[in-house]
Image 1 (cartoon, rainbow, N blue to C red):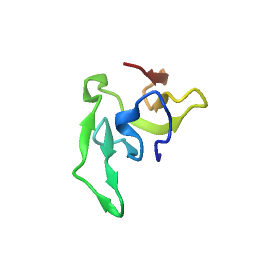
Image 2: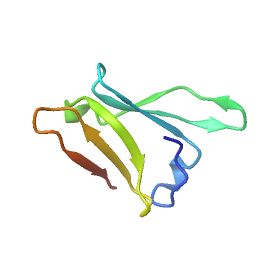
Image 3: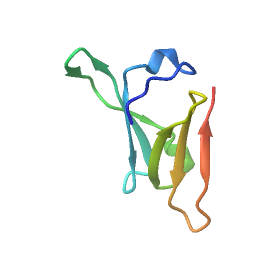
Image 4: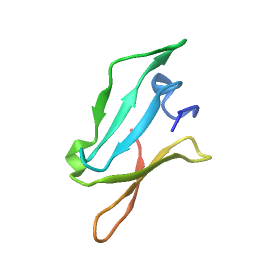
Length: 76
């Protein structure tokens, strides 16, 4: 997911990827045509991240792949 929202201005222009095997959310900062070093986020959830979306409210939503799958809204 390419982030364009206003809730996290420091993340604007970043690419977010969920990891099933890595049970994390990965952020890749993008500056111009260059992709920066990845940053691992929310590994403490301990859940596989099936999908990542930006909501119309500018927050980031994660869909987990656990037995009781859930939607997690990322907030400050």
